[in-house]
Length: 232
Length: 230
Figure 1: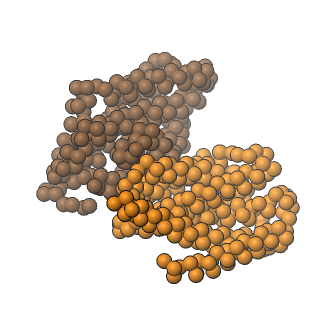
Figure 2: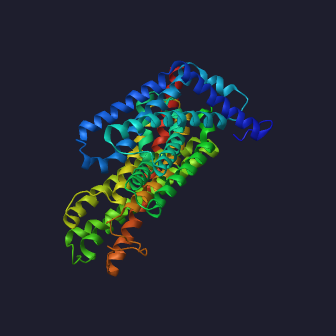
Figure 3: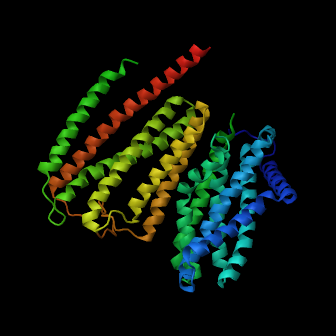
């Protein structure tokens, strides 16, 4: 741990960029991850539609919850896949051999996972707006979604890289991830509901602070412990 | 290995005696609460078991950090022992809480901050055990377990805060400014509670020591088996 690399910040950033670029390029060619995430997300919305009888009255209160449940479920699909690809094709070993700080690999994977999440969200939001006749494109709500997704990707990437190294793999990830995600979920759902209901910023601020605190804390923890996850 | 059991047996005996004394105090010494009646007596062991749950949870987090720093499997055994004990005691605390909540709040369960956090702690621990189960290499199992207890150690307080922001009806013992449903306890009640907490701390120590010892023995069996195969 704490292995110094040649010219620290510049090479670190270029290593992160290389990992992100690799993931996005691979996804651009195969499209296997995003397509399954997207179809799955839309199916979840559909299921909620039937499960909750979304009449206009119920929609008002249920929308933030449905959105976040959709993101969380679709997100685990993506996290699992993005780590499983690395593991199955031996890419992870190759990445680990590269003479870069290992946390650069973590940040690269986390950023590409975040990118996939954001892409899915940018498709789900207009579809949901259209289907249920609500305007979800409000700056406050978008900020909440971004903050929540950052926390999700930070913890999710760390746990997914542990889960792929176990015998139960993809079954294990949601079990590991969801209990730790509760603060993000509560804060994100509450803040989203606040913005949708048009509450003043002062009422929503505590939830935004909580999201921000969670993001910072878990990025820091992942940065510190990722070396132990890939240590062999 | 034989040096320990002597003090351990002492702690075992002491915690048994203390437990009987605490039970007697709860049943006979503490006065009956005026508003809630006899059912309030469950409160003393409820606080004590919840305390042990918290203790084990913190111990697991600290042992996790210690393992990551030293890579000594001793810390992993301590961490696992603490998690298993906490799991059981937290569950006991939840059940006792339900018994109390039914007549007091009129429901077995509410989504109050402490109750929900306790339930989530249980989920974190179950996930921890499942994670360990999926890994064969003891060294990797210890590393991943340590990381997960550390992550849980940080996320659970945040969970508590976030649900607290929603609102709570659980009686607040250690009064903070906003405490609304606080309890008024007589000095006998406070004595009984403190005594129960101390008693359960001893029980925790003796269980921990036994469980860590068991872990060490299991490891020796494993090694002996490997040698026999060779």
